[in-house]
Length: 328
Image (cartoon, rainbow, N blue to C red; front, top):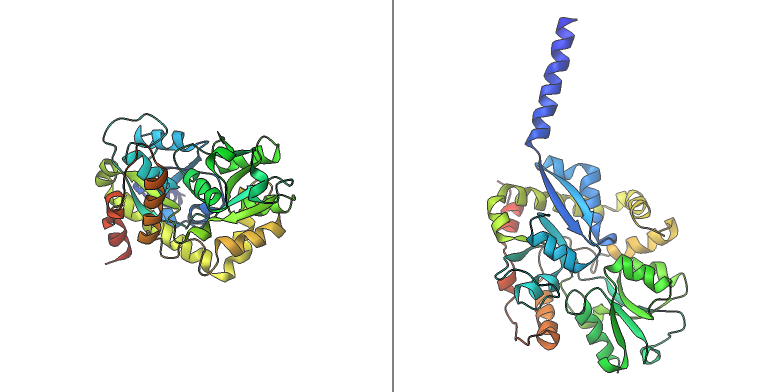
């Protein structure tokens, strides 16, 4: 009995030591299917295998996400590349301290963005005199919306822009009839198409675009290099797992479990887009320099105060990615 008790105590000590070795990371993101790598890494134990655990929280707005990241309430954010650029350039929606130190270190996707409208709105011309909702007026995907409207013959004065928070919030508001159109990200456009709403345009028409990125504060990252590398390695392992077509049924079940209004049939369509061979979640989780240039071009065109932004390297730090991907 004493030997058995000793063995149990020893196992408990080993488990306790392993748990103590894990660093808990507070991650904030917008709610949506682009979080598949995080969900997969949590489910499959990839974070723990790389020395970290992740507490994932969802943000109501980009303002809350950025201010909470800068305030130290969260360690890592999964957000639009445009948010990082906007606040670094003093063009963000919220008032923040001078000289922020945000940077991007991971590339997740090309945006998965579409303009979706109410059933009565069949074309961009039908949007004249109507409301279009965005997360925030000057950050995120607001400039993508403005550019798509312009390319389809609408002046900004032809519509009324309103703030409505993150994608999940805008999705619910569009269903409720509070607005006439909005920009949604996969899989929310799929959920609405089956309700009779109309997808007017896709942001793929803009060419390469850097959508969601992993972002952090330079000061925090410099003090947590080990955790940054662990997070990146786990994220990459999760993406590899997601693209293993043998895991398709599990991935579809994850979509149903994590997204409101998702059904098994819609999960199949969402899987096909989120994990498409060429346009799905970024396989190597690398940042897309050309995609960042598109972000900068749109911000140079629409951002205020007006600035000409041309250098993607200003907003990224690749050393963590390079170390994570070059295992000893």
